[in-house]
Length: 401
Image 1 (cartoon, rainbow, N blue to C red):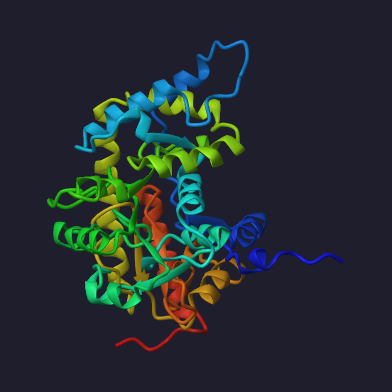
Image 2: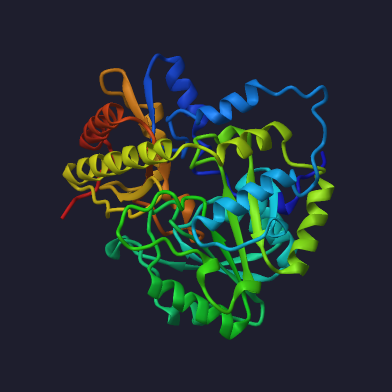
């Protein structure tokens, strides 16, 4: 029988989605599952987007240009200017979700064997896309003890070799919720300039910054404009993950020309998704403020609740809508499976993402989970109670200090 590729064997399972079959079986048994595993907000998609879909009057649902509908790119350029990101529509390539932007950037900028430095824990699919491109992730591990702050620049320089092509950051961060400071971003800029590297910057969560410190885009850093490749998505800020519209934003002409070849090979991004995304740029400020305030309240409620459970610790995330929490357990993969397969409290259980899947090295994050606060506070309260009860009886519980 033919064998699958080595690349396919190396591809990691998603820590966010790999337990879905177990969750489905739990639901079939009548167990209520609280989904804290995936960044799918439960808030309503903006009405302007829903109306745009309902009011489509086209006779043909045709291909769009490979780089996306121009009117959408014009609107996105206007949107970025609100954040002092000064780019032109020609610098924006619409993609099928932010994931495709990452994939196309890696395929365009990295050759097999090239290396990128990534602070970890990091979004798990970065590893998958690096494997697709034949590239190698060199991790720089941050610590829960200092809130997942950026490790010292010395740690970065230790990883640089002749094959190093770039640094990848996510700001605000998924999965930790960490928000990079001006000083940290300046240090990254200096390193990018010194070694002439790409700075791949995932900025999907820019609307969700909960501190007085400003959100700093990679495009705010002077002197590396041609090195920056920014990833974006409408999924989170407008609660429309399913329309699969993202963007790659770049001023580097050679990179854009290379990315466009991959865009042409996949023909075009989703037409209906682009129609909804374009309308979403006009989402009223009241909607954005209401969403922001809701996540601020959920964040406080969740972090307070987690840190009241004996043996559990979570730093306070300053952005996005995730946190990485340390639990008194032997193995997060085993624990998250056990929650779905063997545990229930009053007919309820919790689904979380094992944080081990957000690290490249196998021995890191074994007692950590990523928790997404994307469900209403009433359900967060129930999920926290379930987690507390589960930890009381989990066979692999460890001693707490």
